[in-house]
Image (cartoon, rainbow, N blue to C red; front, top):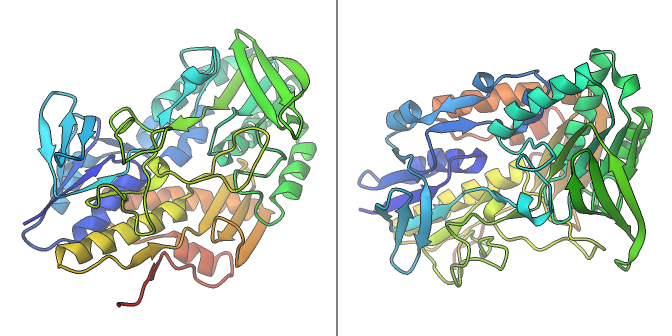
Length: 430
């Protein structure tokens, strides 16, 4: 008998638990360690933040679903991983021992790296459902008392899609409220150009996003370092290609949402041999840590180097299909190890992304996500918004039902009209 522990129950961790459950032998056990029992669909947070959804629409209580699937749930949350001892210390002081550990925690949000940033400072966030609910109240105040908006991401961020989404969703929501004409908007990003996305662009994301911003009267500052944030003013340094200061901007705002940089969670930070200096888990092509071969990692917590040099730190996003491919590869590989075989599954790391604008949107496909690519495609239209709504409903249904099948493959095949994307590649046996 082996005990497999999944650390984290977000977008990746929950599906990881379902797929791993399907790969276990009858005698094996599976436990998920997370903080609380609630799953929240993070891609819906921009809608929550403008009142198009409420918390109950996008959350699921995992306790009953996990029980039905035969998955143990430890809601105390993790305090520290001790890989040399094959155990996880929980926040209440107890321990969970494991034979295999899958780290799927998502990130720690590094608001503290920029003075005045984040919910404890002067800007809003859509990274967590609690943040999105609080942002809704500030959005309502903006509608009552219109003023300038500053939205975007700070240096070191690695998830730019939601920043673009929220800027356009704000535009749509403010137009519906008939106050957009009194709300100047500026998009601030460390990306070297609009549409870089941490991926050096996908298809014509540069042209599509720049055009959409012009159409919607959104100004932008790229190569932007946020130095600090005061109440109502963001201090931004625009840099040249060599990193030297080009210009300084003091941007006034009545409302601001800025995505922070990510780092590893405290439970894994500083564990020698398991994480890099930012606390992200290092893995090989089989999602396996090189120092501790019974530790695997999937999702945002995985260490991925940037796609190229940029004047400011610009991280690589871990998009939905990319995470699902990591999940499938990990389940296949641990399933093989349980049966005395060697891991052979390699995640393909393809990307399919739907960036919603509230009334239309932009979709892109990168195969693989890191260039050079076999497929490098992007498109814009009202169908993207409809597809995003459909994806939300499907994924929440999947979580509630405890199912593990992927959605992105069917989407890419039937809606986008390209050849089916494979989640994993199985290496030939030696």
